[in-house]
Amino acid sequence: MPLTPDEISELLSQPLLGHLAVVRDGKPHVTPIWVYYDGGSFYLTTRLSRVKGKALSKNGRVAISIATNERPYRAIVVEGEARVVEKDKWELLSKISTKYGREEGER
Image (tube, rainbow, N blue to C red; front, side, top):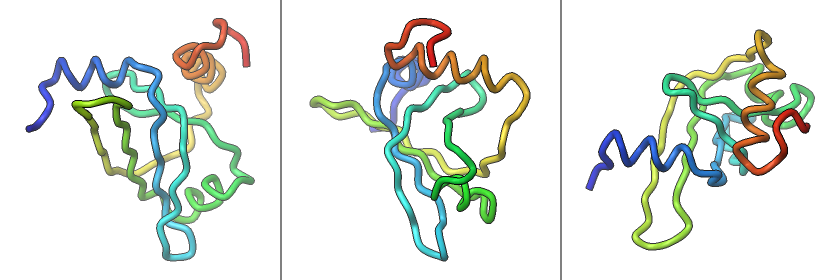
C-alpha cells in the first residue's frame, strides 16, 4: 500500500540508512549513505574522488532507497538526476550530520 504524504515525511525525518545506486562502468553500484531531505531535494555527501563521486561525474542518474528497520516495513524509492552542490555545502553537511546524531556543527 502506498505511503501517505505524512508517512513519507515521518519516514524521511528518521535517521535511517539509505542506499544510493549509481551507474559505474555500465553496472549498478550501491552504497549505504546518510540522506537529508529538505522537502524538495535529497542531499548526501561523498568525495568526488570516491567510487560514487567518480560515477556521478560521468553519469548523474541515481536511485535512492530508504526503509524502516522493523515490521511493518515502510520504504521509499526515488530515481532522478544528481548534481554537485557547492552553495551552502557546509550548512547541508551540518544538517546531515545532526540528523544522524552528531552535535550541531560537528563534522
